[in-house]
Image 1: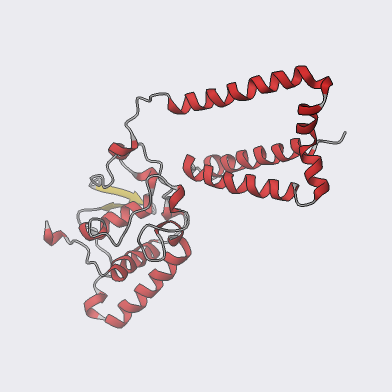
Image 2 (image 1 turned 180 degrees about the vertical axis):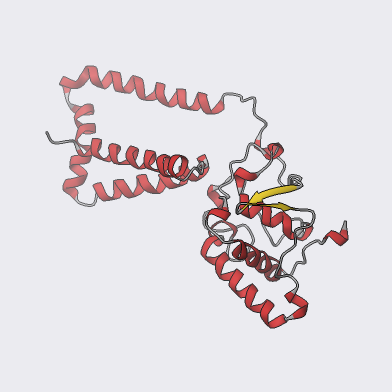
Length: 255
């Protein structure tokens, strides 16, 4: 039995959708944000239909069921059913999206929530009130070594972070428009310049899922970077963030 091309395309798209859910939510245990999944599926749908319409024959096969549904007199009843169900399904989806929720709106979430006194990362517990960047001391003790560490942190940033936070650290990476809330603009003096390095370590290492309750609902795509980067790499990235923006981290001496 030959499966119609349109049904094939739909099955492939649905399969990839649930593939994302399976990989991120089940296998990796990292809940994929709805905004990020929507962005991925946009490209998936565009790619699938590009493949299926690559030739004129493929295009004809793909749209053949739709053309038959609209033009074939014998499918009159089916046509009425489809034309009735499609608007109802769209209306139900829109109603579900507009339905008021008891959850606090995203606009009221705390962008910079108060950090917990201690966090657990890399299988260890850190006291954020005393945690310091182990490489910061080289800024004065060994400027050449510090420069190398910043360079290494920059390489890690470009490979992993610039897609959202931008190559100029201004929160305008190529993926940023699809995210809500948008990635932080590190050039803004109201962001990292007001924070201790331990705060950045906590936020980077534990990502969106590590945010406290007052920061919810989080729909950021910030992953749990301790699953992908080493502890040293995160500290080097933090050096790079401050060095590139010309900012200095707050120290506990400022408190």
